[in-house]
Length: 462
Image (cartoon, rainbow, N blue to C red; front, side, top):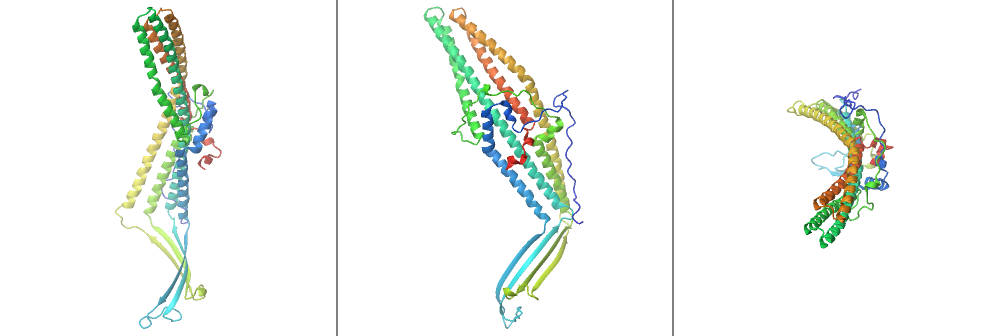
């Protein structure tokens, strides 16, 4: 009866946002669920293996898992406060009492004697107002928040590896396009030099082409540097040193877009996003601290007792006449503390208000993430189609210009413009394809990454 109540406000799960879409005018029906291994939709065995390597070897994920286990151990430790504390002691001493000034405490009356005492003590703080249970509730919520943060690290790691692989493929595509242009420019320069030697064109036209070739070659070193750095990033994300490297080289052609993209209702998003769930658990943790602060302002009741035996010889312990025991109760109430405990309660209330605001901000950012990705995906298909058409047109144009150059029928400005257009459209096509793949990854991440479909979910934390 004494421990039946818990003071302080009970936590209530926040209501889902009152919206039915992520974009203006958008109406959503419940879509397909997200697999816990969502990256398999790209049909790249190399990517699947790389992400699995990252899950097994990434040190940030290992650190997050250890933090979860530490938080769970702390929550279990808090539960110990609900039970009595039992202790056992044994004291042994050899004493001499001045025979002429003091009387001996020994039953035998001897001034030199031994004393052996064995005691069992019990102490119990009665959780009358539920402060201890609120503290346990707070610790449980903190462990839950840490678990959701780890789920977020898991999803982010998989996304970062996928994005790094796509960026590597994009860089390889840009390097390939630049090298194709360099090959074309080299062939054209050979033709122009021959025509200049034959007196068919002026030297400045050949020099202009030579300058264009040199400028194209200048584009390669920065791209190659970025590619090397991207490979280093992939190695680090998967728990390797850069010198160990990654065995697989990614090309854009090694990825396939999923036929159907998932979609989530707004009410479901707040249960699926790890960052929102972590923010919700933080609200619960600080909300419980209000009850702890209120309980600390009320009387604290402690029950204690001990039982034991004291004898001159160990063999006589617990013999008749040697038993000792004590039972005690204590109630303590702070009379004046300069309003310290009152302001501790106010602090807990304001921290709860702060956590609620942070929760709402996290929800808003999550919805922004989804809306941004959906807008990007809406334009990606059109951008890729336009880039492919532009590249094909530029490719036909440069083929025509090359034939005209061979026949001496084109001027340098037309030639240089055709080369520049071919390079720009080739790079734009590569970047558009990579952007579409990257935005698909971003959608899976923005929708929560399917962590709830792991069976059981805790296996990732073991």
